[in-house]
Image 1 (cartoon, rainbow, N blue to C red):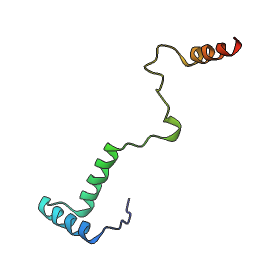
Image 2 (cartoon, rainbow, N blue to C red):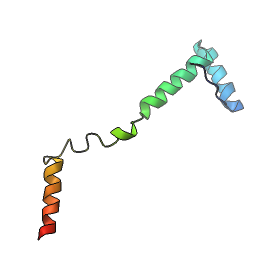
Image 3 (tube, helix red, strand yellow):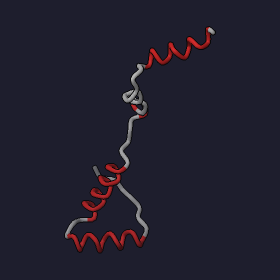
Amino acid sequence: MKTMIELTEPQAKSLSVLAEQRDRSLSELVGLAVNEYLRRYPSVPEGDAAFGLWRQRREDGLSYQERLRSEWER
């Protein structure tokens, strides 16, 4: 997929030097940088953000809810 990005002059110069040193294209270096960023900061779909929160608990969610609500009846 083609896309346009805007780099500062120092970024563009440094990237060009690096591309030449590594015998790679600018596009390839940008792709590698994006892959590294996505590896470090994986996106989690909004609906899945809470998935697995109770994994480490011994009590299931329904039991927890019932226990808390039982305090209301006292």
